[in-house]
Image (cartoon, rainbow, N blue to C red; front, side, top):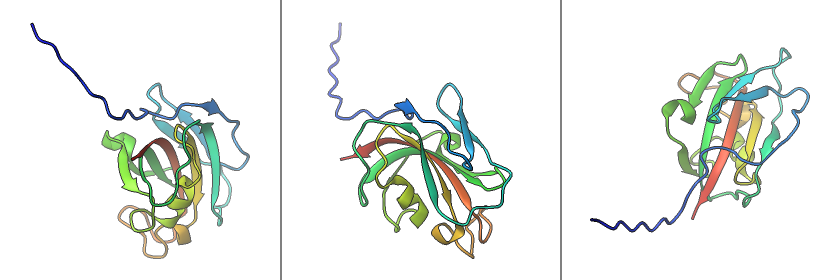
Length: 155
């Protein structure tokens, strides 16, 4: 016979958990599959020119601060609804330090002040994203939409 001993140091959430908030007018709507993977419907309006963030699910954990390392699941969309990047699609949550050296300024604004366990949606104008140059599958001057599940703060 064998005896196994595990010393679990840290457990992270698999997806956002908390209180579901009503959708805000003018924001893309989010639906989730049974595993929490989001999909969005972009409203048929003019492309927004200002940053906007809305809490979809409000978690009860610590608030994210700039320069902390976080674990998140995210999906990034162009304003036409095309997915350009997704940790859900990649099959693994992303871990990074929350600052402009690691992510675009709009993503920092999206995360700072968000509680662990939350899901947020953000509209990020080009000047807070990839600007006039674009990046890979993101064209120049693109307004982005991110849906982000904050799974934990790595300490």
